[in-house]
Image 1 (cartoon, rainbow, N blue to C red):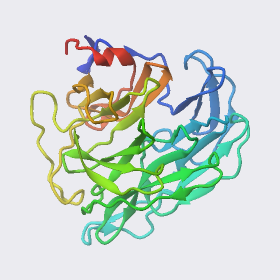
Image 2: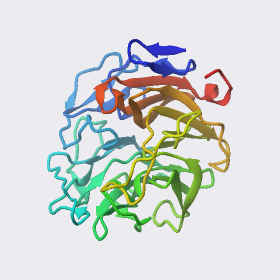
Image 3: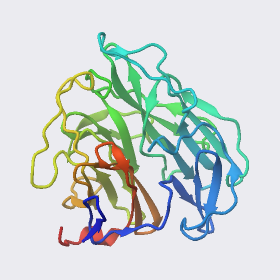
Length: 358
């Protein structure tokens, strides 16, 4: 058992702290070098992030302090693609009396790409205007298709809806899918903060944050171009996003906040302006589980870290090498939303398949 001094944090004994001071996102170059982009530049590391080489300028509006606001992928052809929320023109307002977004809400979605490993970049491309927010996947399918999902704020009634974007030319052009709408009413209600992964048969599975005590799932039969199946999943979850990954082994990994802490029930928060109905906002425990059958069944959830009185949420997972999982909490605080204390862990995939003491 490992507890961070003075804050009550507990970390599962199979997890080790990472000697790195970045939450990513990361990609691995052809020679194994680690690459990331911060607020200003591309940076590379040959020692797993302990030190970083000279940087190349990359200022597009990405915002490292906001978790899951931009993602990177290095394609099979070597193209580096970043999809990001443009923070420079951020504006948000909510009319409590009307229960609707205020005029001028704006957080636009953009993409940019590099053909030379991040040294130079092509022009930015706006993918979606209006107000969009955090998203948790940017993947390349086995067929070479780039794909991610995003949620978008709409009025009448004010709520969030989800769509995906796909590219068949290494991010040169993008096309949006149909909208996925679960209804709801509130500035944190509806279908929010999606994450997705490719299944063994080529279908795409999307898990969607809701205020309905569980993730909802959507399935696409055509690489994310359309979504015709949407339903409640079997995975209980609080009003908090998850990070879904397909690992090199073929297993699915999910890291997320469960509906309730282990051994007790978390009191729900009245909806108010946030949501139509009361919802669990439990974020004190970060859990992980694996699936060998494309999400039909899962290993028992394992709490990998616990922060009593605080939160560990908005996870990001990077498979540094096959079976070596780096797990980060984008929001990691010891007291509610106060007193930040980063959570950066390394765990072996195989250790999540075994039963060890809590």
